[in-house]
Amino acid sequence: MPKMKTNPGAKKRFTLTGSGKIKRKHAYKSHILTKKSTKRKRNLTYFGQVDKADEKNIKLLLAIK
Image 1 (cartoon, one colour):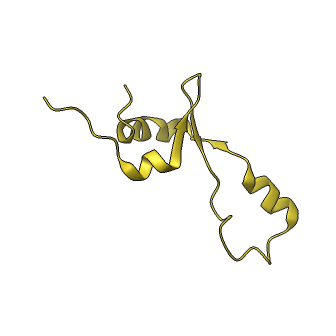
Image 2 (cartoon, helix red, strand yellow):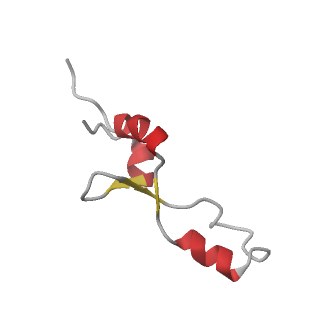
């Protein structure tokens, strides 16, 4: 059976932590920033964690066992 290929889009968007959790960036931080409050923009800067329900699918895209 051939090797699993990593999905290039997922490779750019997600990173794996040392404990095996998946990190992601927040959406809505790229443009139309003038109407968003400073607090909202600052909180969108930080990384979030992928929800437990989505972890299995993302690990398949990243070809992680």
